[in-house]
Every structure is written in C-alpha cells, then in structure tokens.
Length: 102
Image (tube, rainbow, N blue to C red; front, side, top):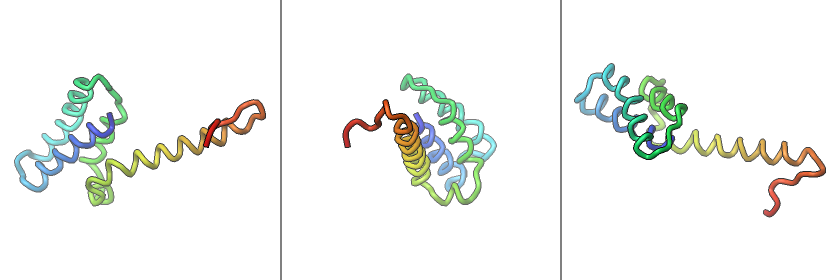
C-alpha cells in the first residue's frame, strides 16, 4: 500500500522536476489520484499512504533529498515503534507475554 503510493510519488517527482514533462500543480493532483488507482487495483486502499505521496511531492527539501530512501525510512521506523510498544504494553501484565518465542 505505502510502497505503491510512494513509487507513484517518486515517479511523478522525476517527471515534474527532472524532465519538466508535467507541471508541478498537475503532478500534485495526479499523486493522490494515481496512488488511489494503484491501491484500488491491488485491493489494498490505505488513505495515509496517499497522504505520504502528497507530502513527498509537496514536501520539504529534507524529504526530497532522501529520494528512494523515503520509501523505506518511514516504514522501518514505524514498524520498530509498533513492535517496541507491543513488547512494552503486553509485558506489563503478568498474565501476558509478548513475544512468546525469541
């Protein structure tokens, strides 16, 4: 979900900034439209992924300088935070243990 939206955003960014084939305003409108289209074709619609595509195209130089790493960095960071919270919250109780196996 997230990757398909970001691939659309990175491709549009290339077409908008490097080749000037598409005006920036049109690219910003196409980012959510194409992201939703590809997510619908995959059967996995996730609105925050569409928002990430818009954030990247509209984004700050810090986002754009990451390039293809912008796909992996938020995903890996979010996964690490979710696992950390899962381990901490599920091990607060003596009756629960997470993960069961290491």
